[in-house]
Length: 176
Image 1: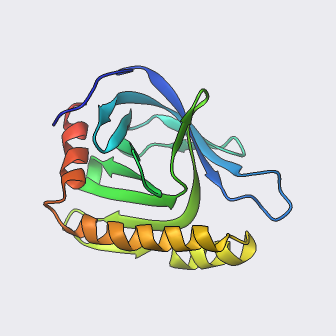
Image 2 (image 1 turned 180 degrees about the vertical axis):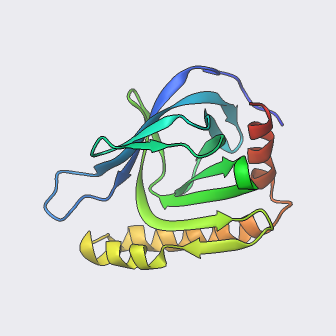
Image 3 (image 1 turned 90 degrees about the vertical axis):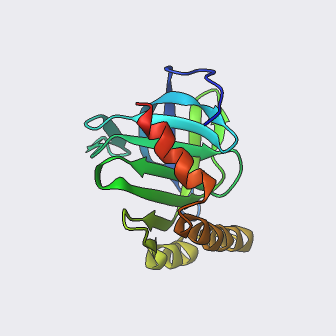
């Protein structure tokens, strides 16, 4: 595994947002947390949250991290993913391309998700929530097309145990 250690160990804010409601001012905050920067490689920037850390929902309720996990903010793509130590699974949010600015990382969750289970099974989940979001939030056609294409592409990549990004996530998780 190769990568840079720029910012390694520093903490950075991450905001997971939801699409704006019709007539709304912009994406709505869903959850935010502070993560430790592990480093950057060809796939993107890797972050870490420890089991027991608290993420904050928009209404202030805590969400306790159930397992040590690394999150990848990809260098490109309509997704963000977590590699979870317990139960050895990968969860992927299909979302707008993650953006890094002075406030930290942010992305807009599009409700469509993928999961790669420990046995290698890959599931496309929350399709019903995605379809509901299309209708309720009036998602633009280019966003719908990008989300569906990314989900199809990643589903195939996640099913391949030899896929480099799958292995990279587990390698980053071993470092912590």
